[in-house]
Amino acid sequence: MIRAGTASHAAAALCCLLLAWCTTSLAPAPVSALAGMAPLLSVERFLQAANARDLEAMTGFFGTHEGLIHGEWRELELRMATIAEVLRHEDYAIEGEWREPGRRYPTTRVMVTLTKGGRQIRGVPFLVVRTESGGWVVEQVDLEHVMRG
Image (cartoon, rainbow, N blue to C red; front, top):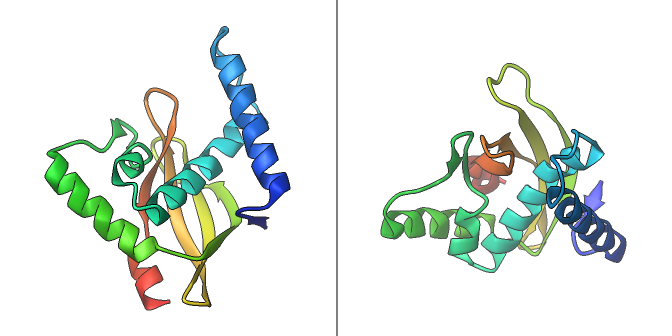
């Protein structure tokens, strides 16, 4: 289980980001273990943006295979504000991740435990899809699961 906020996790994530930056400035890198980290990083950054109520940053991690969510800012702002309110948490932990079968495009299910109001809500699923441009974005999050929790 990966805990948010640990020094070793932050250092590993920073190393991965620096490695990704270095390799993208050269020829396209082959698929590697780093590609498997991308869905986890997208979920973590989305959760951090939600907790900070950084609605604009949230839109940078939310979309479909075709790309980032788009539309009139007022509507997007309301959607992201609602999602941020539901996902607001004191802590989170990544429980695990696996490739989602039966999907047309590469999709990873990331399971998260959220700590809200001192209680743990286990098994919150995030579906993260690879975009046409090669990035990873949150496509779905089960907000009902969080609200029931």
